[in-house]
Image (cartoon, rainbow, N blue to C red):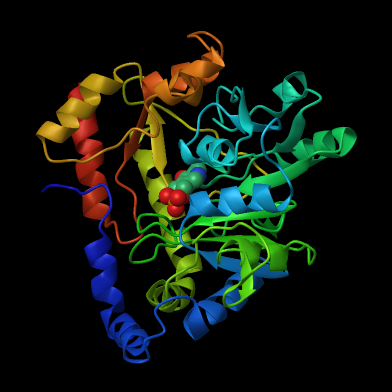
Length: 367
Ligand SMILES: *Cc1c(COP(=O)(O)O)cnc(C)c1O
């Protein structure tokens, strides 16, 4: 039996009866961009995240960009980001002309090491962007305390953590603003590219709504230089249906992670990403670590088990950031992680037999 890394077809089949008619409604009503389906999703998603506002966009990257731009961050400014994250966290900073400043992660949790943030702060620092990596919230209390002390903004990169909680509070409600991605493979995924912002702050919401729509509130009246970053109507309609299932899907992911952990414990030199006690982890990805990562991945591939590496190159060693002048050894925890991590199949519809298949393939490799 082969095991896919994610199975979006299984989920579509389970939702087809609900999703097909609402997508066709958007087409029949020709409400292709923004419109009532997006508006409803914005209201429901804000409520879900315990935030006052939510703004529908066309990607998570756009969400990061607009959050920073709306707060007057731009050329000459610096934003602190983890060295181990998806490229877009830093790209969002760079695309508005600001400079990402990297911070290493903790060895065991893979989350940005809050004890190393202060050393990265300069006169130019404007914001800290913690990433809730793999679905586990970052150390928000520590990070907010540092931000307060140095008068910095905190923007959550919540693109992998829809529905995760930190000390009982939902991500998306924990800072000055939060960026979400609804890329199809995320825990809450659309049927194309989509993203969104959640925030409490009334002052910046209208500005972000303008920035996503060519700097305009009223058609052909442009108050700002903006972008074209609006959410499509079809994506709003799909997300409205899927939001109802998010908590139960996240619960399934958590259970699958516990099944994997129980079955894989003690096999070879396998280790897991630390689960911190005061937060819920919604397992966007289930990541193991081993010194034999490349050989294990090849073996799994040969027997039909798909896996991934999130991510193989830390940001400071990416070609695109060569101009920042970093070298190997600058962020040792992030670098070691990149060499050891392997993401195993993880999606809500995963069945026990598939988990057993993955575990037995890994067991054979190490025996
Ligand atoms: C997916 C992701 C993004 C970007 O989202 P897009 O919708 O693909 O633009 C940003 N940050 C992290 C951590 C992500 O996982």
